[in-house]
Amino acid sequence: MIWNEKAECMSRDEMEELQLRRLQDVVKKAFNNVPYYNQKFSAMGLSPEDIQTLEDIKKLPFTTKDDLREVYPFGMFAVPRKEIIEVHTSSGTTGKPVVSGYTREDIELWSEVMARGLTMMGITEDDIIQNTHGYGLFTGGFGVHYGAQKIGATVIPISTGQTRRQIEIMKDFGTTVMIFTPSYGLYLSEVAQEEGLSSEDTDLKAIGFGAEMWTAQMRKEIEKRFGVQAFNIYGLTEIMGPGVAIECNQQSGLHICEDHFYPEIINPQTTESLGADKTGELVLTTLSRVGMPIIRFRTKDITALRYEPCDCGRNMVKMDRITGRSDDMLKVRGVAVFPSQIEKALLKIDGLQPHYQIIVTRPHLLDEIEVKVETSQELFSDEVKEMVSIKKKIESYIENEIGLRVTVTLVEPKSLPRSEGKAVRVIDQRNIH
Amino acid sequence: MKIKQISVFLENKKGRLWKALNTLAENGINIRALSIADTSEFGILRLIVPEPRQAEKILTENNFVVKIKEVVAVELADHPGGLSSILKILNDSDINLEYLYAFVHEKKDKAILLLRTDDLDLLIKVLKESKITLVPAEEVYNL
Image (cartoon, rainbow over all chains, first blue to last red; front, side):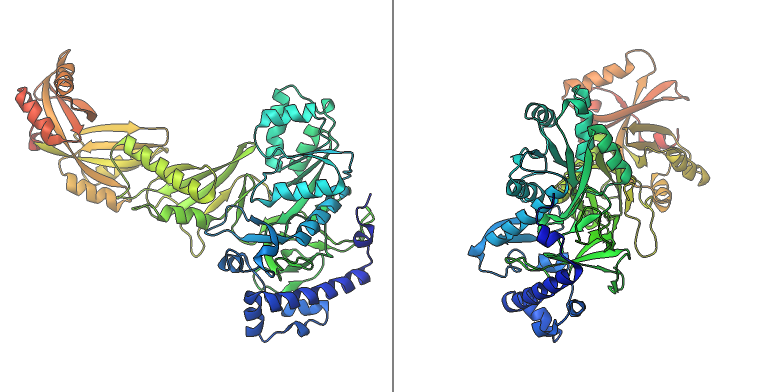
């Protein structure tokens, strides 16, 4: 089934015509109502009339996460604050988070794209969706929730955690769809096994996952353990939340709701536009969002766009599963972590050298972070209990900054590798790329 | 009465203790006494050497983190109960030890006990009052 056949199966010509009309509209609104864009366009000598074709989007400046952070909290809103009925923020970012504001129309739009996605996964009003994404400032929980309500499915807003209860509810309520991050899904399946629940005892028919990078092997493992197909959900707070792109039953890429989010691929170093089938950084422009239009947002996610028709019957462009980042962001247990955040935490401690190394592992399904920190003369105490308390202090400073528990290991001075230019700060041993 | 002890941070990694001791050996520094406090992740090597300042300089130049700490040395009879009698004095005086280590004084057939507390002056005072023989720094360095 296709949720919105008119939009999802539109011909390329019709789509481009619609995209151009909406692009012209969004650029005009951004120029007129958002001081940030007005100044930026004016400084470049641009006016909304310069957008005559879709190609003209290349004239427009990029928007980065830093730009959004600079106008914290509400500087990107294109409507009076009272018209914003909901806000979310990006997770675990350095300093101030990015605030995303939604008008009533935006929430409706979010529900629509997520409804399309859930339908792609074969979900209907007959389904019971157990949503383990967190409900809160994080967009994951609410995005899935809105889509589920839109299609009329029964949603269990359980959020993350309470794993044994998750399994009990899955069994007792007859859950047909699980939504989780791949690593939490693997963990859940282990606990389910311990509880003696096998995939035959459940009514599951599909799994939706996102918010983390994963490999084909991980998907295969999840599908094997739960005995159903697992589909990829892509989204980002700055643009909307989950539902920007979702995988159909072909499982060969994610359909971008391109009538609402215009995708481009650029070379992350030169910012030069790359065509179809070329791998580079995904750039997104919101075409219909009212509360907070975003022009050419650099997602830092690495992917490629595929325009060939899909066997599922939809014509919306497909993007590959995200295979990397063009910056040094890490996703650990679904939370975005930048090495700079860890550095910031370390710099708050007197006597600490900002020489560190982050080692991410997945020893037993869940991600672990170890931070190696060089000791210094000032930090060193000849008492074990003092050293242990210093280690704990560093751990708590980092946890405050990134929102995740880490293990700190104190190492000898000058023992961490130094390299010319960019130091090797991160060692990711999870093999997820 | 206070003896300068060198404390060195060691990662709990193969070869680190050797590296520290070898650095001293290559520079002709003899070790009089040694103790290691270890945890699962790191260790603290504590050394008594004849020239603590020089040893500190050499280790620091070789990228070790070093601190000089003062300890007190006492002499005790090398027979059962020698150590516990000292500890009883500290206990009765409510002195909390941070750490201690002992070794045998070959020339005198006596044991030497090295003690570290927060308040070394108090420790010295209590020991003296209890007629315990304190070993002067020079003697410890040149054992």
